[in-house]
Image 1: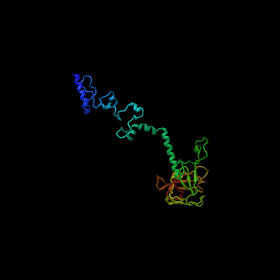
Image 2: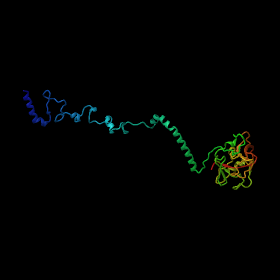
Image 3: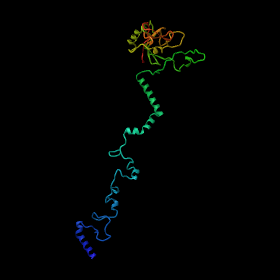
Image 4: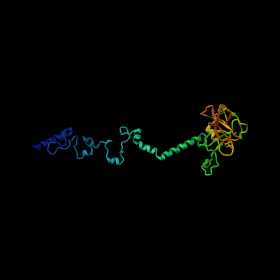
Length: 306
């Protein structure tokens, strides 16, 4: 009976079922003949179809046809196909901004910036920048140091006095600019070579005298050697010209300041304990003293640098 039914169905399949596509090749009528996977397409299922990817698995993580940025094998990373870190593209992981990076590494940054080599480099750059600026402006490179007294004779048998500590470079150094002005290499100040009233390279003629207020206004109004910013020097500036060498005055370098009068020269500094007085420098003895501002003394003007 079973054999006849089977023969009938096979015949029906061959005449109609194959054309209609509604009856599978292996009908599940007999025990043991039902395939493990339903034959969803014509021709049935062959071994290895699922493994080869012809049928998609319902589990996404097992599907061989799925390629995701998030699911990669270690082999692909090693072969260089996929970078170990996510690329910096839209949708991927983004690095922290500059502030976060600095905050995260501030200790390392500070340590490197303030390391001894870095500090030395900064100092050298600052020095080079400063000297290059001076050179670009045509300014002499001055040391801005305290001027020496100019004393070269040792008067103490055991040493230790002023002249015992002579600096290796010239104690007092000037530049004759050839236009009636002299520049002090140590202070950078530019002086009139002659006292007011004198003229020429040897400062011939008689120097003029002024009271304190007139001395100030005379220097302020002076237009000399192409400069109009002359002024009356303060006490320390004028006293820096004193050279304590020789047996008699004037105590100044007469090579650069010839025919200087061995007398009083006004400074712009008022005597604070008694403001009716002002300080002056006495070049005959080389000291500073004070007298009433109405007195008349000699004047040498100055300006701040070349």
